[in-house]
Image (cartoon, rainbow, N blue to C red; front, side):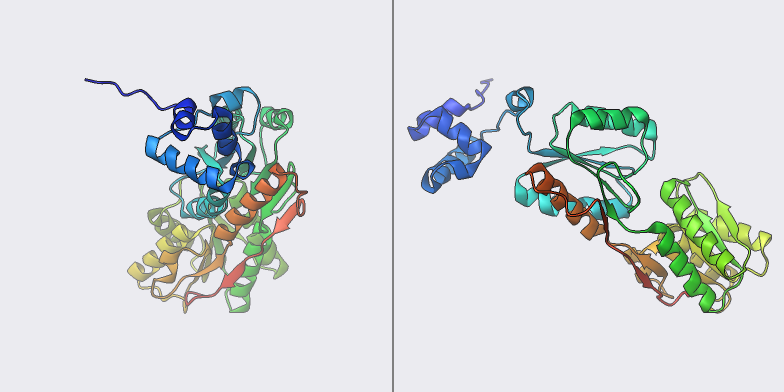
Length: 331
């Protein structure tokens, strides 16, 4: 069996009758060679199936044209939308996106960041704004642009997101203004953002002189969990007339359980979720939810990161993209 030799820069150069340095310059920045020459090089690269070797660039501390992106979940639609937004920007700019998943674990986040930094990435997007001391030290030493998303509190360098507390409080106050008095909060995982939403819920309840009821767990979100929490809330508060959930999964589960138990939504119990997933908008009644700017968040974070990589000053240390209260038919 014949083993084919991997094409080299010299193969491309010899085929075109130009210097190896010219091909190398084109790969680093197409704008540094004549347009016609660049087109010929691009055609030859495709013809030969040439794959650039990035190792020398990494070892020489040159730009890797890669950014790191850390997300807590690859299956959660929230982060799938964020990644899509990021890659809409990075793909056009010719940057590779190196994804890492840390499962809401600060320790695992630290290890993933260490691994990404070993590839000499040019910048990094993080999904949290609280980190271990070692993570903070590694990022300081790396001296690369860092952007934290999903929240607009204080950050290491720059934050792109929305106010979870304000969003939660606004939705709960809407439910109160529509007549609910015995509203429960359903939370899962109880990561930082779930805690911030619970804080917003409690602020709304206390503002109106109402008693909060938190039904929370460290379990992962699911429709089944939302149904279980609905049953638990009814035991603890038989007068329950409202449910605000940390995400749409729990809200949908609660809505399904209401339908199974013969409880009218929103007449007897109003239900609201968070993030505004498509599935919630296709239900009957249509789910009320806080619509978050996930795709836009990814795009803005990626563009800000690339701007800073290229020496353009950051737009602002905190970019608040806001949110929308969608009432649907379940509130």
